[in-house]
Length: 141
Image (cartoon, rainbow, N blue to C red):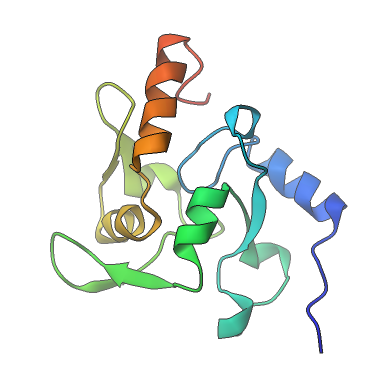
């Protein structure tokens, strides 16, 4: 049995709820060279559903790096931690911006594990943040 695709209406509502930003790295869809996608927070292959509370608006970089993962090792403690869940967690409890707004800092084991797994400070997104900061378009409001 094939999986049913997520409707364009659901995609649109997710984008609106997320302020048109990736719910992980906060990249803005308006400045992305690639379309954003719908991420299954708990992947379908791991029993996740298409229910609203299991869907997140994500850039291709974060969604691709997350893949089927639900956890990662915290680079500080070495302990396996669950990944950030945009439906259950508050972003600012797990992440903060560096003083120049180009890097994300993990405030918790969940935040650090998510930064590690999703590459939230990957070169391309850091470069984009730097350029958008100079134009006063980052961080998103």
